[in-house]
Length: 277
Ligand code: C2E
Ligand code: CA
Ligand code: CA
Ligand code: CA
Image (cartoon, rainbow, N blue to C red; front, side, top):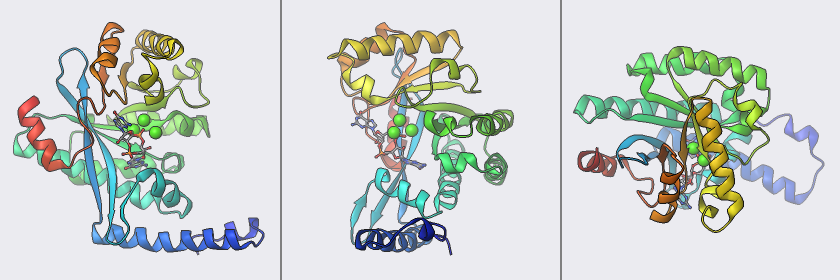
């Protein structure tokens, strides 16, 4: 049974029983959604601060449930992790994103990198890099266009093992980014140990950068340090031109955010690539 082990740690209470039921229910629903193709990937452009050019896209999973409507990934990803389904779901996301990239390249769109979010649990598996490699070979894409986004907290669990996996991924030719940087337990000191290409500044700093001098100073420091380590910096959650101008003044490399575009379905992304690339 997928959820065994959790039983033994719990003492019975009606609330826990209902949580347990919800988890079981959701496990079934996620399985069903995987086979029914109720999941879909949306894409949000990553844009050059300097030129406004689209340099990549981030894949963000969407679940349009037949009865419940839209369910946010912030809600179901943690539940999929709990239910032991994140590996299967994560593989679907990687394969889907690679297939989309392949389709775009074959159709003649200018090739942009495609970034996929990886959960801590996926990263902890010792066959993770092998699995990703198998998908790249199966779909036949150039691995240098695949980027994996890993949150800093997920690397802070079993750091040594994670670094090993990250090195394997890099040797395949995949790019790595630290996501949500600044919100977790890591520090600038750790940054040097991680074999990464890009740093993503968490949106909480970006949003406050014009109203809170602390956030602005933190962003400045992050960009400078990342650059001395040879990393590219991308700011998330840019919602207006004032923040973008601040980022420009700090030599931030790339940005993402509603100011440019919300995450959109692939059909809309295609139109944007024709217009903007
Ligand atoms: P994240 O990776 O940090 O993604 C950024 C989130 O911020 C996305 O929410 C995106 O839609 C939202 N966002 C982007 N620009 C703006 C902006 O300008 N303003 C505001 N307010 N929000 C903005 P979303 O799509 O709901 O995803 C939430 C989280 O769920 C993601 O955070 C990521 O941790 C997780 N997630 C999404 N898709 C996947 C996936 O395929 N696999 C895994 N493991 N996690 C995923
Ligand atoms: Ca992300
Ligand atoms: Ca993020
Ligand atoms: Ca996040």
